[in-house]
Length: 444
Image (tube, rainbow, N blue to C red; front, side, top):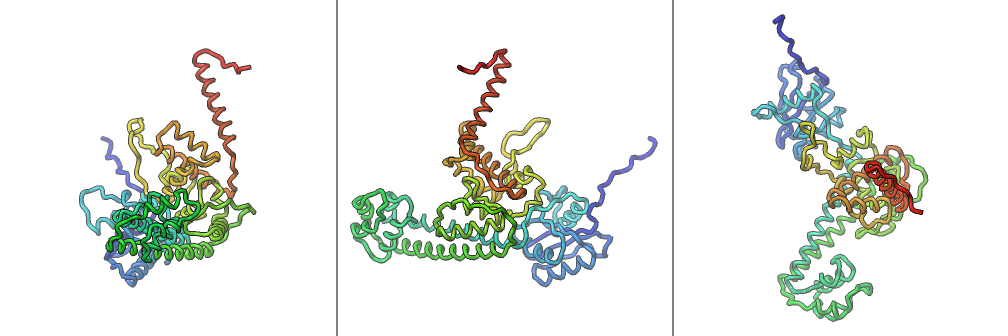
């Protein structure tokens, strides 16, 4: 042989970087061994030690830091380092998995530093601090609403144990009739006919039917469970109201984006807000996002609020619609091996904004709009889950276009969809006719 082949090595892309292995009690930090004698140090999770970590990295000239997303333990060091001016990359644990079988905190932080220095890591999307504050309030409100649904389940259970079939004559225990009757029962009323007089006049079931459903055994332990569930429900309703006020304050603290004068879409009804509160929240979202996303059919104010909290108005981190939809987990999977597409689902993505868009897509089934017609057409040729994902993908593309271009949504209508589908079907028939050597002739 003329000579030994030169061994190719990876180039150093980020020389001024560090890797952090995040833990619940301590954080291990690794830097380039050429910068100091001790290139791996351990810092506790206390705030003073986190400040000492930032001081040490500043003294070494570090500008970029990569850390693994571990539970909620990454939040404190992330916020401290981000406030000190470091470029912090939050990395998925799948990207930092060790190749060898060995594992320790020292090896993990050194491996993260090595991957980061060679440019092999990409940071996860995280909106700005002000948007993160809004996101925390929106998520807290969602958890309170979920806890309220658990209280309703407890009420249903207590009524069933007392053989009170109120849930069979009313559609929702949160309605006016059900709440009036439940509060009267907790207050001590037991006469079914007296309780039936509390029914709302819009209830389909008559007073006699409601009275028949309210005959029960009224055992003490079940009444006690019902009373506590109702008290918890009322307490959660107060907390939801407090969350709404905090959300509105967080929206008003965000920068106002320039937007063209537009007429707001009619907001949908809310179980926890009045019409005036819905309109005020919709106006605040318009000022923050720059466009009225609630004008898109099936996107209510609550869905737009989730999108504003999870993503924010700035989508510059996503170069195209394809990147944005891929981050949401709504893009078609590209799993190819041997030149063939692999069957089965792709990587599972847990994204709250994507879940909100899927819920909006499922609601589009009854929408008298272009999106609703497109969704119903998808349901005829594919299963429900795929149709919902495809419609959510369509909504995500609309949101990206509106936020990046600042253009309002223009409704095409069902007629435009039917015309497009008619043209598509005609072209398909013409292709089939040409393959058979035939010509399509329009009827007289």
